[in-house]
Image (tube, rainbow, N blue to C red):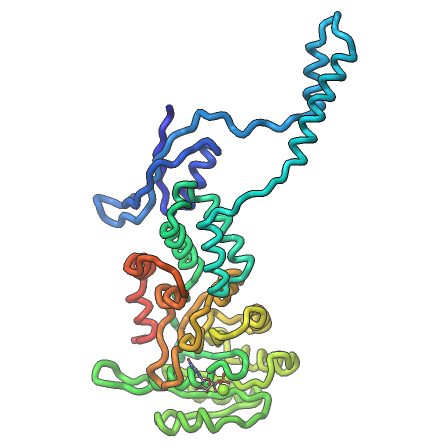
Length: 397
Ligand SMILES: Nc1nc2c(ncn2[C@@H]2O[C@H](COP(=O)(O)OP(=O)(O)O)[C@@H](O)[C@H]2O)c(=O)[nH]1
Ligand SMILES: [Mg+2]
């Protein structure tokens, strides 16, 4: 019997390699985490090693090909055989094929897969996300693996975590201009106030940054009171602009501050004309402006998809997920952000200014999934790469 051992950085890559090299006859025996590459024991990365053997069993019986069988019989026909005999054999084959085809093709769903599907649906993952997950599980796990529902859950949790992307780009330009766009009521103004307090109020450990708050109100709603109140409490100047010249004038005045936090006011994202105007205003903030989409974790699946697309023209860099404290079903958010390849910057977790904001992290998001029985220490460890660096993004010192 031929045995094999293959290694790669991820389980999926090892499985792909095995399928390519050995085909469907490859049978998995063991798998383990290993350290790969590196130089004299340094810089090695985590990887997976899978060992197995090549099965000698024949592959699934080939389907009957009537034409092929006919030719074969005709080839084998001896001079003394009558055509009637040949036809009889052809008839027999035809009959066999028809009876095979009429057999019901009912496939019992695997119990672990059925349970996982329910678990994912209960967490509001989108049908297409669930479908992809099930296809991956079926492809990568053996039948023995599938019998172990804890392993199935752990594998699923791993993939869910891998499908979440955290925004990691460091701000470079000064002043840092941070703009929040998004539907009304998601928590943009509250988040701006949290960030203003976080950066603008110093303490014994960190020096305060010079912060300005700017509201773009091209809807002329005049709803500035909320942010002005925050500004007064924190002693951070607040201004409001409605046109591009006003905006440019303000930004020129702010050229030597550390951080300009730009809040936007809107009525309905369906107001396309106003949205286009808002987009022009934000473009006037310049290339260095970091635009982020504020999205509430409580948004309905169909609305998330619409919002994520509708604000696309703003070229937002990442998503600030708000109101994470209000829901434990965030599968829809994970599904759509992964589908649209959007990453996460901050989570906001309550109405308290400034404390209810944190750097986005995969484990925190995964802990908002319900009903998964997995080893949380492992999840935490696996997705903690760069967490310290991430915390610094919030500190920004
Ligand atoms: N539970 C919860 N409520 C929030 C959060 N962020 C904002 N809110 C509340 O959501 C409401 C709308 O917030 P606001 O900042 O005015 O939203 P905006 O229209 O996007 O500016 C207010 O009542 C906020 O207190 C959050 O993270 N969690
Ligand atoms: Mg607001």
